Image (cartoon, rainbow, N blue to C red; front, side, top):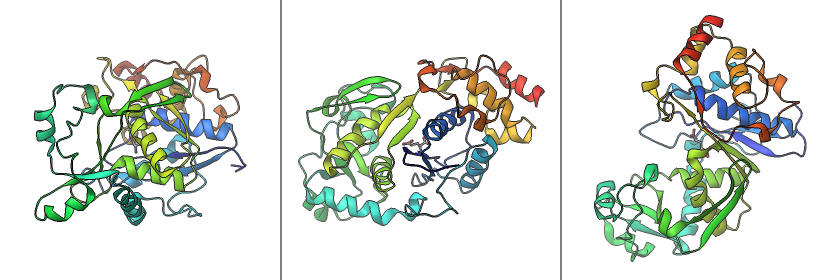
Length: 325
Ligand code: GLU
């Protein structure tokens, strides 16, 4: 693939389990968008979410992506200037960033457990994002951490009352009043591991990522990440949040909907073209689900054609792939 002066994007699997059809659709779109523009694709392994990370899942995710027909210009085993590409090998970078946040009094040590936050919050059910942090520990400064010996604490980012907004390539204008809608958020976990929000912003910035295409379940995270970009004075990438794949009950694709792991489809003899053909049709890229290779979609790729609603995957469809091979 040619690497020009186009955008830089990334495929960023979390090896917390097997990759499924929903992940495949997002990876395909992220890859096509960059390849269409003649840009650079980075593969980054987001493995700091211990203890949920599974040792086998990294290799499997790489094989899944290769099977789908997606490639990358940089990544594990293809080291270039942005190496390393595995988050657990980048911890020192995140610690430096954390230091800067401490120096600026932008974060504070928080001794609240999840249960404490849930119990103290006035509106305990605000969707998937959990309750807004009630500010119990917000009076603290970084210096107070020294007095907390023997007590477990995380670090929280102090949000302010400004409205954060961005224009998403798919979802359009997205405003959020960070402090009241999402609240102060964890930036370093109790075990000392940097949280996803910090790692992803640091990586995207230092790797020169200019386009982030991912699932729309991450829109709330984007607001938090924009607050970090703002703090560090970094230019945020262009964001494109795509609708998720859901099961017949309308809920996000999961085990209860049957086995849609890419590994399972592969070992059942389903061809990547069968799956990619279905996904391409679902993204408005071809008039029907005829089998197609990912590379053959590059020339005519257009994100504008992507339906703005979730894709419902039926068990009958999966059975059809199994039959078609
Ligand atoms: N690693 C995340 C996931 O697999 C993606 C995070 C991102 O794209 O920012 O869900």
